[in-house]
Length: 328
Image 1 (cartoon, rainbow, N blue to C red):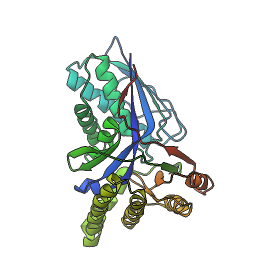
Image 2: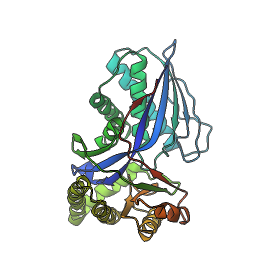
Image 3: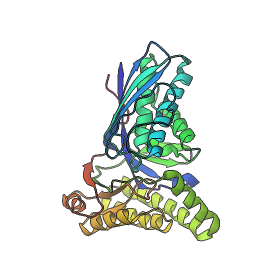
């Protein structure tokens, strides 16, 4: 039996624009998915998944997921969660050459599914790492990140970025631009996260931004402007200037709102954080619902979010300096 965990992430800057080759800076956070894998005596796949949605659910199946379930959560979330696990195991079969091996897989996660915190990337990274080690092979971090990216790319029908899986595999702060992914230095970051209890539909939101870029030249300029914000933000981050980082987060959020990927609850939480004195606040991830991230070393933003209509949960999160952890 092997056990691996991998962290979720927030975007300081750059979501959506990263799809078009602009840079992005995601940061791993100490909210983790933990995957336990044990080889079976047959070639079947049995998955038990817990706490992958806002309320938590358990799904067990043998072989490929047949689309039927008996839990009261949206079918797209179930299908996506199981698709990521299936894809991860396909990568394990590919890299080990052992196609006829089955596994019992147990997933535990404190990262809400579909909320913009990289839950799928964390599950995929941890699952590939644990399953390959169960077969006696330990992947280097770069290959682990690459194979996790291939899984997300397939499940998300070509719309995935390398950002989430690379960040989850390596930990820390990361700069992503196209296929180039590099860890970068970052100071201690006082993250505060607000969660509205929902989940945006990533595919629809990405498609919406693409349609705007095709229809309006100024929407393409907006995407490029996000890239400019990221470059300035990276400089401020490496200089340890959190006040400037916060101002640029605010700018980034405004550009994302202009591209139509924000939502009423996200806007309410962003402004509650700013009014509470946060250095900056923005949506994180695809948008449309889910989470915002703010920077505030005081307790004021977390307290304000807890009393903000539309905010289901608020919590602090430390930067996860370590990516995948091999626990057993």
